[in-house]
Length: 176
Length: 162
Image (cartoon, rainbow over all chains, first blue to last red):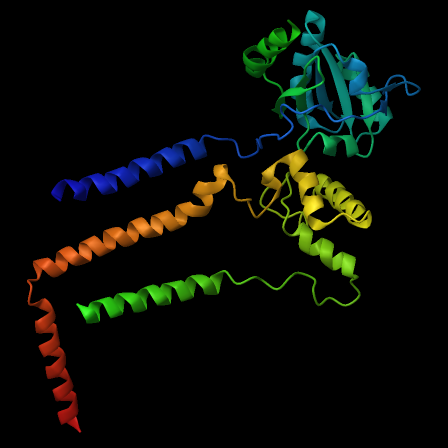
């Protein structure tokens, strides 16, 4: 009975600390996407650099590609942009851009200014495709496999760690 | 013993009353604002059950974020297309996950969330009950008799007062 006096409060304390430890070390902004493991939602949008041409996920079946959601008004896109430019130079995986809720002129100017790492960018003027992809915080990056299935989603700017530890190993594995 | 149990029962009943008093539904927003159509009222109610992903502690109805505007527009379009509230919620959950719902659905992942408080209440009740019994036993077997005579004495004192 005496032992119980100590073990019960101590047990409650341990449970509480575990919950707080796990809970507080999580980023509440990172909402797990229900789209992982699901086919990339279909769309057909015109290209930013060639408004006469359109592009959709169906055109990219058979290859692994990244979809990077960006905008000229997006401040943290500037943070990740050098990484994307570098990735494009290494020629490991094709990166497509979704210019989200942006004026096409502003988007083109932004790419001219900061460099264009994208194989192509498409224009989501009213953000409707963004909604289909569950976009809520630009920038976001999706990894899409040869079958057109979303395998990974990065919320917020890409980091060197995320790229080296998560995205590129996954891309290499999917490319085989 | 009986008096103690009755008192305990009263305490539980009062606590339950207090708990139910705080969980009564707030009046549905916009219900009595003149000039609102039935659709507006329905959307307002629906949007107040949905979370804005950008400012996470606001409902879709309250948020001024750009995405909230877009989602409100989308919800309205779906409602006008004849979709039910459940269809609209399913549409948003498919894109943003259960997180958009202020009322989390009951499923294995959320069992702890739904039943945890009751488990805690039961656990606390068990501990309380154990402590109570131990105290009674420590006070000696004749505790209830002593209580009864004391009650009697008190009643007599009160009666004599008249």
